Amino acid sequence: MGNKEDCSSCGKGLIGEGYSIFDCPNCGENIIGRCRNCREHNTPYTCEKCNFTGP
Image 1 (tube, rainbow, N blue to C red):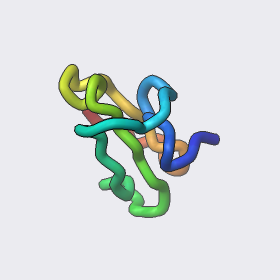
Image 2: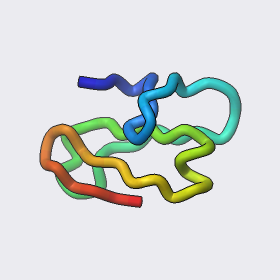
Image 3: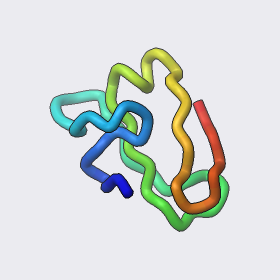
């Protein structure tokens, strides 16, 4: 299971500017991390708790 310091899409560490960390918009029980690159390219992520997939 990833952590809030890793991108939920690509798994890279969340460093520098432009990343975001937020609760899953579906279940609110898992933390989603998004690196700048995946955010800018709308790379999908999946919540490990409820399997919600978002852009």
